[in-house]
Every structure is written in structure tokens, then in C-alpha cells.
Length: 115
Image 1: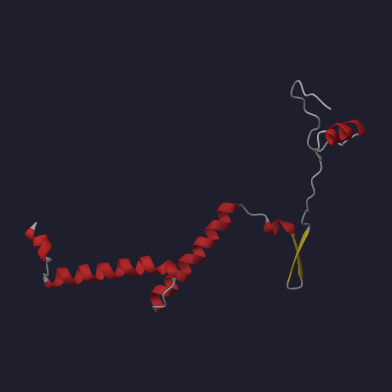
Image 2 (image 1 turned 180 degrees about the horizontal axis):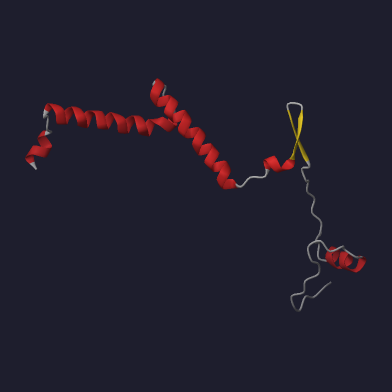
């Protein structure tokens, strides 16, 4: 058994695990290993490209996605094909059209006149 009396750092990131450290970590049921993969090249349509083309941050990915949604919404509004992203805009445009018609014709709701 091991009794831990104070906080001690057994290993640092990148440090080689020696026999004594491995034995101590094994007694505590800890495994100081992690596995990963580094991308060196990207293959696309017969072309080998440097891995730097896939280095991007989350905000740029979100920005590209939002730009695509805006384009789909614009196409939907122009063609009349209903997609979920365009529904709020369609409702807003319909309300604007109704408001414009009521202003041009002078129509007022009875509930508004009573107030």
C-alpha cells in the first residue's frame, strides 16, 4: 500500500518514464501514456498537400458554416423553396408586406381603434 502524505509531481509532460516511476504509478493504477497521431500530409484527388491547410481555428469554421447558411437562405428566399433557415425571414417579410398593405389602404384593426 501507498500512503500519500503530500502532493508530489511524479512526472512532467515529455519526461521519460523510468522503472521507479513506472512501479509507483502501477501501484496507484495510473498509466502515464497517451497515444496520438500527427498529420504530415493531406491527400485529396491525387494531390499531396502540406498538413498546414487543415490548421484552422473553431471561429473560422463557424464563420464558414454561417456563410453557407446565409447563402442557402438567400437562394431559398429567391426561389420560394422553404428551408428551415429561411422560415423566420419569410415570416418577417410577410409581416412587412401586410403592414405595407394596411398603411396604403388605410385599414386599421378595430382593437387598435378601441384603445
